[in-house]
Each structure stands twice: as C-alpha cells, then as structure tokens.
Amino acid sequence: MWVNILIGVIALLAGVALGFFLARQYMMNYMKKNPPINEKMLRVMMMQMGQNPSQKKINQMMKAMQNQK
Image (tube, rainbow, N blue to C red; front, side, top):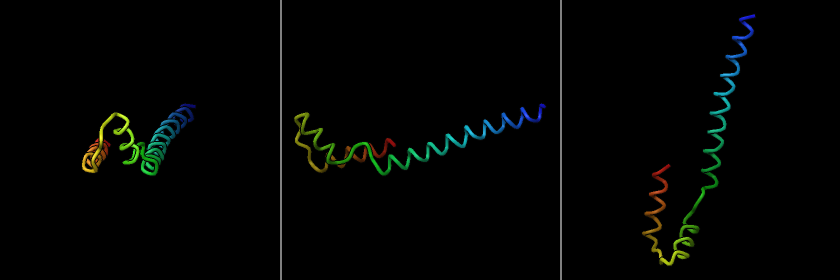
C-alpha cells in the first residue's frame, strides 16, 4: 500500500516538473516568433508621445529591451 502511494507522489512530482519545463519552452519559442514589440511599433509609440525618433535612438531602445530578457 505504501509503495502505491509513494509511486503516485513521485509520478505527480515528475508530471509537475515536466509540465513546467514544457510550458516554459513553449512560451520562450512563442515570444521568439511573436515579439511583444518591434521597431515599427516603437517608432509609432514615440511619435504619439511627440518625439521624432531617430534610427539610432530606436536601435538603442531595442537593444535595451533585448538585454532585459
């Protein structure tokens, strides 16, 4: 009886760990394929805020966002 309970607990823990890593991998691939913001979106946002963004400024902001990942 104790063996069955032990196997059940071990299987549960293994399932949780496997599910976590699979979900993490899926989300990383999704974010890589569909980035939350790109240069065009950044340019539009800056123009809406009244700034006239240069390509250098956009590149700096994109690099800063990439480094935060």
